[in-house]
Amino acid sequence: MINPADLSANLAEALAEVFERARRSLVVVHNGRRGAGAGVVWRTGGIVVTNQHVVASGRAHGRARISLIDGQELPTRLIAEEPEIDLAILQVDPNGAGDLDLPAAPIADSRLLQVGQIVLAIGHPWGQLAAVSVGILSGLGEAQVRGRRGAVPVLRTDVGLAPGNSGGPLMNAAGGVIGINTMIVGGDLGVAIPSQVVESFVVEALGEELRQASV
Amino acid sequence: MTQTNGNNLLAALSDSMAAAVEKAGSATVLVDGRRRYPASGIAVAPDQILTADHVVEREDDIRVVLPDGSEARARLAGRDPGSDLALLRLENSLAASAEPAAQEARIGQLVLALGRPNADGIQASLGVISAVGGPVRTNRGGLLERYLRTDAIPYPGFSGGPLVDTAGRVVGLNTSGLARGASLAIPAGLAWQVAEALAKHGSVRRGFLGVRSQPVEIPAAQQKALGREQPAGLLLVAVEAGSPAEAGGLIVGDILVGLAGQPIDDPDELLARLTGEVVGRPTPVEVLRGGQPATVTVTIGERK
Image 1 (tube, chains in turn red, orange):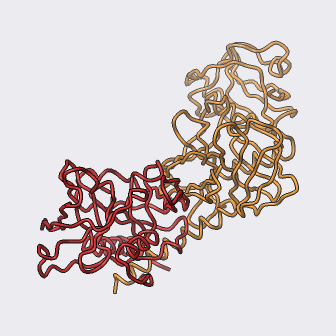
Image 2 (tube, rainbow over the protein chains, first blue to last red):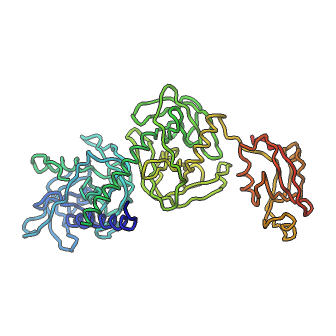
Image 3 (cartoon, rainbow over the protein chains, first blue to last red):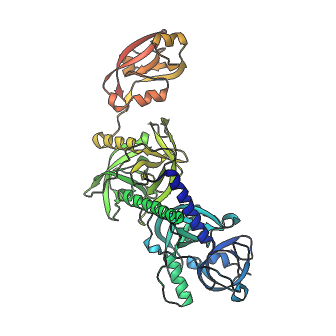
């Protein structure tokens, strides 16, 4: 039998650990306007995934800057975008990056998810840097989108998302990224594009073999 | 080391909640019985679906989507508008029954609200039991002995669906139809009782006395005459002609202080005591008449 005090301490510890790990792969995406979105390092070598709508605005288009949680700012280059599923891929400028170590977040297989599982959303809601919210996976469904896809699978959660969570990761209890939060697709608050959809998009954009999920 | 243990625990909690959703979700159905979007229901027996009364606008040809995605038809077996519950009977289909929790929910307990408002599958939200209250008069003219309040998000179409514990046992039935702007849950014990009555009689019988009353203080001397400490009773301000109260000999000016051996000190308490079980039974009603205790026998009628 587990002592209840130990249990809650261990749970708190586990949540903190997931958050600490996630923070290292979390970035702030500036688009030159007011406000900012979030992004996640999807591949080593400075491949960052964020929401398309975060980087879509006029003068910063294609030239968004990101900053790390420690404040360091880096220029990026837009290498792919798909408004339909609100995803964009940024390449951190290698000149600016220097010997920067940007660890990729562990990606989990969103096809194995079950409604009721604990999820953590990490981002910068209302400009609060690297804030975490906890909830559960509320539903697995589809959202209608315009364009060639017609419909896209989405993850629904009861985590209260706010502007600034856009483009940030939704993680599972083991710390794996299961989706990218967006407030644009689906017409609801609180949906995420599943990691497998993001992964396919990245693979397509980078022209590489589909790799196995690492978590 | 603690990190590893901690993470196992977090993952274990996560998995157990997913298992709870799967278990309770296997007894949660879609109920399409109103003009707007569908709502949810709980299978309380293989052919019986308990749902919220306010989501059932038809009596026949109610479309039900079972957890396996198959469609079934149901008809209304009975309704209790006062507690916002309705029982449907499935035609030619069976569902897995939900398991009600043996104990009443406690404040702070983790709970999941479930619903099946569309074909995408089960939906859930997480919260805690925020409050346990009652008795309360509902905005549908009934009296709810107990209710649960939770901070789990009631998504559209969650009315009629279950509120479950982390083991997937039902602690309540969610409805947004009882209190304006708030989602309440009817405790499972109460909901199952009503379901049983609806299955048997098609309605929930409630006792009828035929009086109007207002709470009054009982002076110390009269409490002494009563032989117990009871600071309040119900002054009868009207006795309906032809009512059970009149037939039993209750008169305006009596202070009602007890029914069937139980002290009564406010109108909600009286309503709560007038259950279906006392209908048709000669029942002792204890009053103060002219300051002196008296007991008259009233054969309780049925509220129509």
